[in-house]
Amino acid sequence: MLLSPFERLVSLRYLRARRQEGFISVIAGFSLLGILLGVATLIIVMAVMNGFRVELLGRILGVNGHVTVVGSQAPIMGYDDIADGIRNIPGVVEATPLVEGQVMLTAHGYASGAMVRGIRAEDFGKRAMLAGSIVVGNLKDFAEGKGVLIGSRLAGRLRLVVGDDITFVSPQGSVTAFGTVPRMKAYPVAGIFEVGMYEYDNSFVYMPLEQAQLFFRYQESVSHVEVMLDDPDKAIDLQPEIATIVGDRGRVIEWQRVNSSFFGALQVERNVMFLILTMIILVAAFNIISSQIMLVQDKGKGIAILRTMGATQGMILRIFFTTGASVGIAGTAFGALLGITFSANIETIQMWIEGMTGWALFPPEVRFLSQVPAVIETSEVVTVIVMALLLTFLASIYPAWRAARLDPVEVLRYE
Image (cartoon, rainbow, N blue to C red; front, side, top):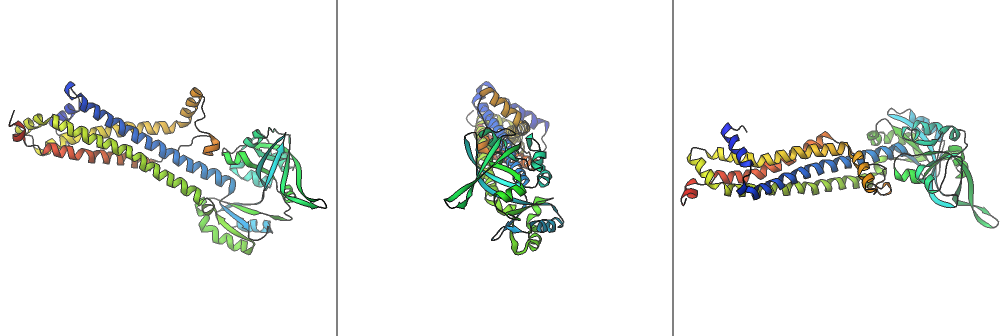
């Protein structure tokens, strides 16, 4: 919509408040502030929710695999043959035999439950998420069967350092003449890892596959085989081909099925947050309507004079539409700039606030991740901007139409 120089001049004049129009200007200012905060908050929340999904998906799949083969009725026999056959499928990066079991860990008078995963050292090194997660110690002792790898938070709770012994207590006891006796064995700590996800760092332990088979009594078998793909989204498509190789020795489960409820809940939360925060922009749009209607009433005589001087209804409509839309455009622009800047520097802001207050704003035991993630998607930012502009433009139409419909004769009759 192109404006004439006269229309631009009058619109700018009405945007600048004079003393008697101060109250109207305050309402317009709050409208601009509401749109600014609404757009900024919406962009920030969407970026954080995207970051959560990307980080959780990356870490969960980086540790657990994209497709899992689980024994149907018994442990998986001939697991190396199954893994070799799966590796030959196009799109498969790696197939890793694993033994998994739960134990009670004891050390230095402390105890904690943990999930133990038996894995070959070469397979551990092929997982990028795991290979780069060792913060203390090294993979050499683990490869030589001289110890286990333990999560950083679990090591902290049990007061463990590299070289200390940790005792595994299995719930599957050994039957003796005196009854069932829990099986216990001590292993040295070869290294401490930190993948950045609280659940894994707090409860996972890795041990060599052969020792895990002995401890959990998996004779020449494993509990499952994890498959890594070059594209996680191919899991459902490759599931039938993997199932053909596995046959009746196990069931094939894709990551979408295993984590469907978790990521479904994240998506629902994301959609609800989007709707709730959109209400902020909607309320600000209603403020634009109220401020513009009050402006029209205050400028009634001026509108009548403009009409008698030759201004058309279209000109009046464009003048008042421009004044209302300008508030929305300015609020949206500054809000988008604030939201993008905040999202791009969210970790720095978090650390600064925590340093100033001494409070943990992002407790990992509640949020699962050790830092605030934020991923800005251009399409979502554009959607938020377009939605905000559309709402403010719609809010500006009625007051502008009302101004254009004023009858100058009625307004000036008693002046």
